[in-house]
Image 1 (cartoon, rainbow, N blue to C red):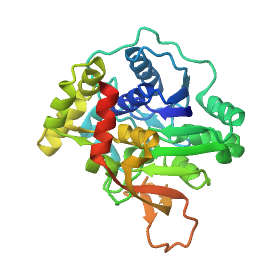
Image 2: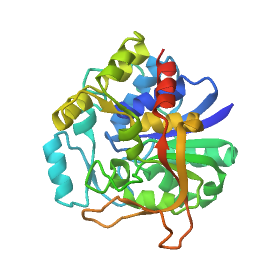
Image 3: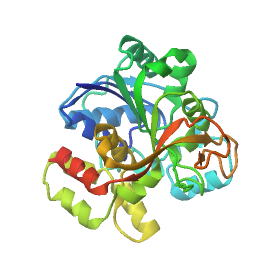
Length: 328
């Protein structure tokens, strides 16, 4: 049985990704470490606990970092305020609550009965687990890479003890969903992303470009999920309410994309990957327009180590088949 550790900033798409893992009988989830990102740390813990209660499972949850490595972090609930903050090129990071809802779960009133979590920190849990079971644990990261970077800084030996790390972050085509150049998870803590990407750890980057190309669900696909008439399917669509409304206001159609679930799906089934390349990926840590950009050196111009397997094409049908199977 494959062993997984999930590191998440649990908002609405993280919750669906965690649900996919919880519903897969072929893996053992050793624990879930939480980091601030989509929502502040405390809300991320609550949202993770809610997802586990839905699945009637009790995986251990660990509190990780409540702010980026070297940046301040603040809550922003309004989209216009968030975009003004990004355009101001402030060094301060901000939550994604304008996308996922103030509670991170579409503001539909989902709260866990059991709010307890482990006393051990998420960073120490990662280090301890990897040292106890070297080369046996797959790590899937769904949020900013702060916890992973802190673990590397505290114990660099874990770099070679990770079986494989699947990162939802960055883009391979130069697009961005926060700025014109940067994806949210990397933008929140680019310094952490640089540490992780430069570490030599075995990493597969599933960028946001895979989500908007291969994991965008429009009205027909939303209806298909709701037609399953299961608590898992209803939960997975209903918690996207804020994102669905935002998608309509921004793009003129009802729908949502699932960056974290397609990353988890790829970790569970590598055959979802249709095309990938081993490439050098450089993280821009400078403040300004390109803060958090993942610069993919396709032609080896920098003549550096090809440190990351970059997913450039995914099979949407295979992803949807796995999603539907998990939600039945």
